[in-house]
Image: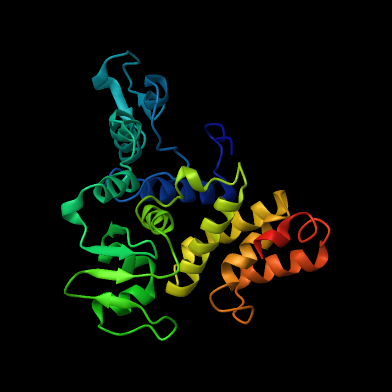
Length: 275
């Protein structure tokens, strides 16, 4: 609102405007309690940008004493923020890498998983129990798993898993420590051995309730079947020879459906030799 010329009476509208301006100026005083939200408080503020928060005094010179802050709180906050060191550039600490490095230290591992080939695989009970509620029951609550009659020897720190080989158990431990599968479980080169190992690993996750591992193996097995349909026969056979066709989990059902819908590409394409 423009100021009226000298000698004129102030109108009611101007008086109201002046009153509101004083109240707003009082709210944004330099007591340190309030600051203007419209002023951006971010890094890399230039000197010109910081000086925009101040106005020159009556001397109209460039001395620091002649600068009068229009908003002291915002000015100081912006200056401190701009001079703060950028710690994000130093990089974040990789906890997964440190955890995986611990899996290579034998003195930190307190349990041995033994498969059907009687080759022990060392692991940490605490790490396994964090991923599996069943192993938490076995290791720390002294209970037996109702879904699987395991052979756990607490005194000897030994857990027998009679449906997996050493490679599969090592892959399960590797996933718990690193969050990913080993390179030899890659689906880029599908083969019968990779399919059977992944099927065993999926069954291991299914029995002991490793939900994260189960999701990884399920997606990998579906990718194998979609890339080479005949491997559905090897996967179904690996998951059926122990319990028969009665026990059906998700990937076993997917393999069975693939054989029913594409018999020419599965059973009649050479998959029958694996059944």
